[in-house]
Length: 391
Ligand code: PHB
Image (cartoon, rainbow, N blue to C red; front, side, top):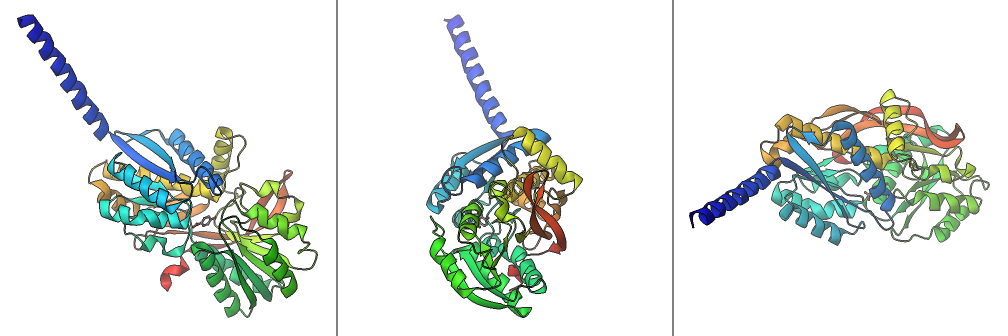
């Protein structure tokens, strides 16, 4: 009897001990819920960001301030209803400390109210409509905004022989931002926007739009389509002989995306774009980043999405270090604001007021380097804040 009691007690103690260990272990964890489009039209964004996040962890360890970092990756197929459900599950069931990722604007916006309600920092690593950071005070962005990069093209084009333009953008948040901010600046500089065309985001057929551009015969076509759709626009632009008809393509760097550029063919040579990241950015930090990324992912070249993911992990790690894991979401958020660092893209900081990233914007031209196509930077505008916030 006594013996059985003893064994039972011992059993209980062991159970209690393992339970308390489990909860101790849990509080020693720091969970990042990474919501990304891993399948569907935007899958390249998910692939790039996952690879970059894993690289950051491999380089910086998976224990920070005594906490074990756990990355929980969920596929939202870039569908806002799914994003919302996944964000809810991650916050309520998995008790994540941060939600991050967000491949497209509607996904980032769908999660925003949940970040606010639960006081969970939401690190937007990809989506780039200006207004996103205003959807929740818990959003911090490490990607870019379309106004930030489009204004640079509105300044460059009129000085370089482009007097008339047709704009062609994907018909949703970032496309509308690109169209507005490029056009306003281009017109301010004396350029004329002949026509503004918008293509559907889902399964776009560019042919009828390009026919219209041919008929309008502007000096240049200004394009924004989201990462992953650039190759299709470029292909149809070239197949229709637009370049031969004397129409130049100018674009945001989303079109000459490093993920696809090398497969676009020589027709892409000479295309000028404005953007915040090129895999060919000639800094030592970027060379190190690209080398390590390609060593870990031999078939991939990192694009701007990868850098948004890599820097997003950096912002999370440094916030955790600074707070030592104390103080919850509000403390973490406070420690994300104002971070200044050298990104593979160049020097950046997180504006403490807007929680948006401030960064250099480059003008780049597609050139051949070592037998491969790259966006080669030839000019830079330093420390660009999102112009969308001034409005
Ligand atoms: C967006 O949906 O905000 C978005 C997606 C891909 C891009 C840019 C913006 O390349």
